[in-house]
Length: 259
Image 1 (cartoon, rainbow, N blue to C red):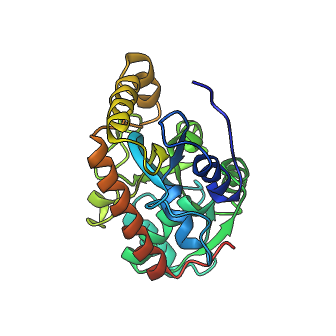
Image 2 (image 1 turned 135 degrees about the vertical axis):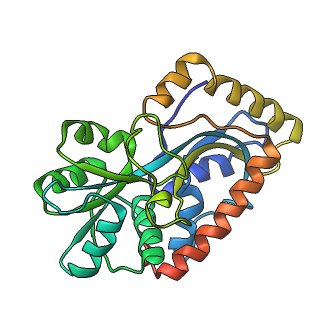
């Protein structure tokens, strides 16, 4: 296997690579849930993740964690809701569409206001959070966990329905006052649309076997990220449902277009 990074164009560069390849299972793309999010944030989508791709397998899932600067008087989801309702100058850091989407979903369900401060990636976001320029962040566990363990940031809730092993004492949002809240991102591997079903089935089995090896499973567990599961058909159904679900949430949240 040869891995070639094709960043840019909100995933469109990588999608173009797949579009120009033969539907034989030899050229694949790995992407996150951003694949089904970005098209809804574009006035003119650069690709259609449902029509242009054949889902193969989910590689892993990963919940986010809500963290606050320790100087903020927030120690629970209930505290956070009250804080956001009474502090109009509270800044919520955003490291991109998927982190902001976790916060937008919280905003809609908790009926609070948020002022989003955008940053280009996790590193500058952490600088702002540690400095106190932003007070709240909905981020992936690998980006924040060392700061949480050192006490430089305070974790108040994880965004999955169940607690995660690397932060066992941190409750979920659902058990902390917003029972319907769940935000879990994921990575998946895809082929060009039209790839024969027997090839997709073989690839699915091999990918899931690989992510369940002790070495890979240990790496995923260390960051609270369970390995993927399910058949090709199950991942396809999940992929389509996520595409439709986030379309509705993005419109409800009135998120601005990015191009």
